[in-house]
Length: 339
Ligand SMILES: [Zn+2]
Image (cartoon, rainbow, N blue to C red; front, side, top):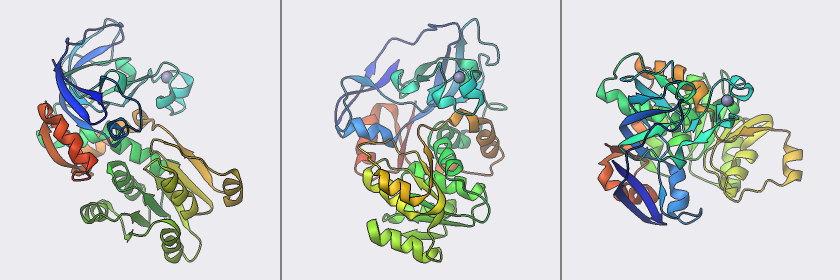
């Protein structure tokens, strides 16, 4: 099969690799219907995170080709969506809704899903089958559910978004944009998007943003306060992972408010005195996407949400290198790779 490999920062190749085989009796093998490039793939691409000849990708939808002998709920031929963390969905941590911290978890990025085929561990716990084979136009949205939608959804839940709430969103990548969609679905009254990018501002408004703030730092915080009677936002989503973004998020929240942080943390240090003084709730980390998949698949299936709009560039898997360049240069929000 063909598979995307990052040989070193800024070098993407597509290689012939052995087809995956069932390793554990709880595995499934899927044939990808589509795959994509994640904002988090840019950390190693930019050399911020070590990389040496590594398979890439952790988002996936596709058709089950083979299942191990202990798989009972997923069948050959099912169209499935799974999270970027494989999880058993039965341990105490999973049952509490934290499948991304499952005691048996495996991160799909180590397996790599920017490929024609992929092995999915813990298939019964990880995969959710759609009601039938989806129409082609639903595939981008189902693929978005695998990570960016589920992650944006968790961020909105962690930020306690809901009716009557003002939600501020730091980060205008796919996760931030889908955090806006999630906040809207959860009933938020006002949604403030931080963005300086015209195309992303437009999509933010389509997903439910009511206000856009282009300023950052003190000026950005001041604008949030000006929009919230000097109190700050009830709920803030942090979808970047840098020190600047985390400080923007914490300082934009009102006392007693909630910050949901889902940007993969790189060099973030939160001063204890600041945290102590704010009186906010902080919750986040790798999103338990699996918890939300049945609900998100239903919303997509019933065409109530269209998260696939975040894919603004589609390329064949063989042109993955151009997809990485487009995302690195912010020419594309998110790149879908056809297989
Ligand atoms: Zn578990």
